[in-house]
Image (cartoon, rainbow, N blue to C red; front, side):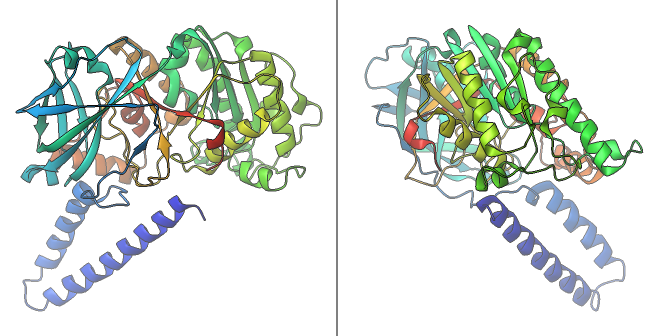
Length: 474
């Protein structure tokens, strides 16, 4: 069982215990209160839970984030003068740097009920970065887009339902302009490339998109059309395979630079554990990956027998890397992203690179999921992306932030809107919860779509982490 699954199991157990205690309290209170009071209290308690306690947050908001940054970063001296952030020495701005500010953030009264945020003022456009309700600890702001305002002494930090305090620390990470290089994005599922890196690959000098699985499982939406479970899974897999090849065209990526490998969703860990053994689909009742590879623009080694094996996956990846010769490979971060297919995706790439005649100069990691906080990045569509919660000081992290203009954000949102898996309506319970949170907790829906990923992914920045070869295994 993964750490994320353990955290979810503990969260659900605690919620059941809390529900049981609450029911007992209501039953006992019914002895002394009017008959109608217990049901009213029950409804109010449920509304309060949905508004303020339904987030999957598996740590205390009062915990300090604990980052250990890569030694390549420069630590600069800064201080706060009121709201203004002042550098102690001149800052050389090149346009290709990531700036991270560590500072203590503390909620004010309303910050326990409305998401607290820090507004970054002084640049051309307002930026806002949001934190956990009830926050009272060390947090990390992404100042990359505001390097010019900081260098001019014009950058101000204004708390909304929170305040900043303590001695700030600033890190500067210089980086190449990866948009000027050949980029290959590894997507475990259709839409992972767009969620994590549409802004990067849409601007890259040359881009390749490689999707590992068809993402065919959890096809209940298609079963509602009258299809049997296996038939619905096959239809969903074919649609997502199409998405993985067609949507990058919106960003100008040619058809010849996209590949769908057609392996089966959530079967990569089993494939890795038994590299020669085929692992059939969990739901589609098939064991041949070629159904989902029919639209590829060129043949690959796995086409020979269509077997869903780890060794075929490695052979496909080696062939693609040698064909594309990417200078930058973008893949899930081995430690930050806990999805089992994402963990195996990065492991497969690192294994495929071993002994290969072509090696990328840069490997960037991304996190479309987190262990500890299902809502990150917090805040609204169009906001900036503060650094995620990290509590493992053994990780040496090198952040890389890429800014997106409003036009680029809109293009990214349209790309996500083309993805079939993000189109179905949310469950009724989730829609009701969002309405309650909008009314009582001030949370705004995304203007681009109902799915939560429109809020999480369409932002002012895309955040990556530069990896070394030694970081290939979590």
